[in-house]
Image (cartoon, rainbow, N blue to C red; front, top):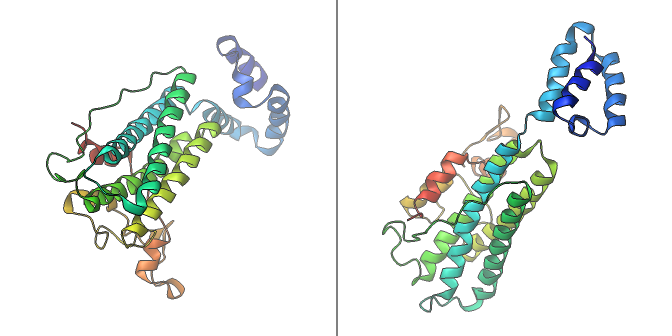
Length: 266
């Protein structure tokens, strides 16, 4: 097997093969040490791993994640825009906070649309939203407590959603970095609105104690997990079950997130 000839053959159909693997110099330097470190019989497996790393993260899958995130950001931005425009909601001292959250979410929308277009994709359109969730929250824009309940649910969902997609962006460091930056902001939003509602800044256990109605329980499913990487944290060196669940925030799958978001899409 002549790996150099293989790469030259790939270059005929993909001129960017060297950039995918590393710079040209780094690629060939790496191949030198690569050959020294692995036995000849293991070369095909090791080489396959190397190419998987270079090609495994397709642009289409990254665009799919970005459009998924854009749908969530549309939801959050529109929720705060409509809520803050409602004359029936008296935000009092919290208005500045929710205006900042609105501006953050609008910025996230614009960033994601630009990123998708920059990657050659088409941003998904903004859905029509029904923040009453078919009547489950009929006073969402007239009662501040209901508005803040939904705000908490949306922000907690956003945090878990971005976390759930991190592995899908691992092959694209630039996009992953931007996603993690948004994730951190969503986490700060969640922490503050939770404290405004009289809760801890983090989630304890499952839906119980989260001060949300049954329609929002899906947001907190799985958060009662105490097993991490095969280790049961609860009871370990005096750690309580509540502390074990609070110390780790669980990711949500795309399907779980869309099931939550669909409740609010008309």
